[in-house]
Amino acid sequence: MLSISQYRLSEELYDGSRSTDNRAVREIDSLSVVIKLPNYAYSSFSKLVQICNQYSFTNILKSSKPISLQKFCEIGIFLT
Image (cartoon, rainbow, N blue to C red):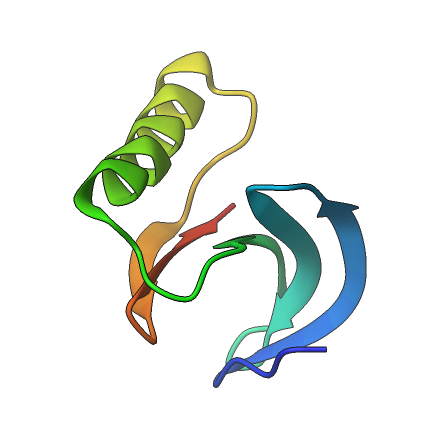
């Protein structure tokens, strides 16, 4: 399983052709989060736009409360 600084990954929730979602805990405050990682080594501009749009839609729909959209090793990540 991938290691991400400041987060402890605990469970894979979804593994699709485009992304993988993982349950994790943010170590500084023990906040439970979901981390969405694209399944490709390098992000094209259009793929990054898709991730940003998903983040925006989640904010609008209030289905969960996104914490932040961060860059990780040339790949966008989506945290909720």
